[in-house]
Amino acid sequence: GAVVSQHPSWVICKSGTSVKIECRSLDFQATTMFWYRQFPKQSLMLMATSNEGSKATYEQGVEKDKFLINHASLTLSTLTVTSAHPEDSSFYICSAFTGTVYEQYFGPGTRLTVT
Amino acid sequence: QQQVKQSPQSLIVQKGGIPIINCAYENTAFDYFPWYQQFPGKGPALLIAIRPDVSEKKEGRFTISFNKSAKQFSLHIMDSQPGDSATYFCAASKGGTYKYIFGTGTRLKVLA
Image (cartoon, rainbow over all chains, first blue to last red; front, side, top):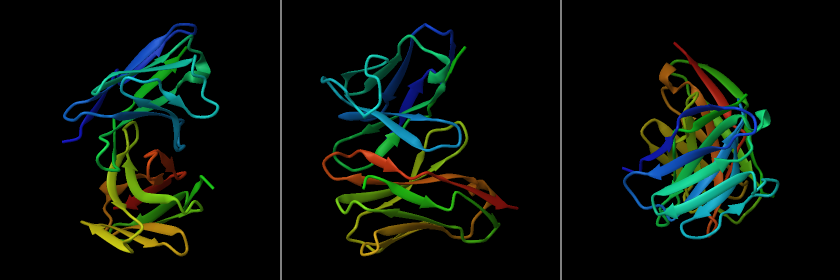
């Protein structure tokens, strides 16, 4: 149980375009989802907290207009990187929280490369 | 106060050895301390977690030791295997927010 999927697993886009990443909880309802960014050989950096039906809460220094987060249902959250630039290239990971235990369940990640 | 300091940055042990990874925190409001294992190109997977009211927890070959007064906790991997070679992250969470503050990670290599 507690499986989280991400789609796509890998995406290449051109500079200036937008790309959407989906995060789904497959076998449970997630009251909260989190979006992280990870650079090579570095730790996970929390970008934003997403609650179903409400606006996402962004961490300090994260551009909310560049990283649009939507949590339309209890099983789906999306991250849209708008007007992507090469510096947005990174590994993006989501996690889902059930609200009943402290554990976060992580997705497999999405590798974004902006050319 | 929000940081979680993790050491060492990297670690090499022989098969069967017991690698130990340490984490320290400042914020006494943290009340949940998980350890995650991450393989290259994959998302982190929960290994084991502990709450501050317990000094030690074992799950299989993984043990967390927790020292509340010192604000430190550590992961021990018993009888380590080459398949344990991965990056390990500690984290801390404050009740009510459920947000994780991650340590900087430890790259473990277990030699066959």
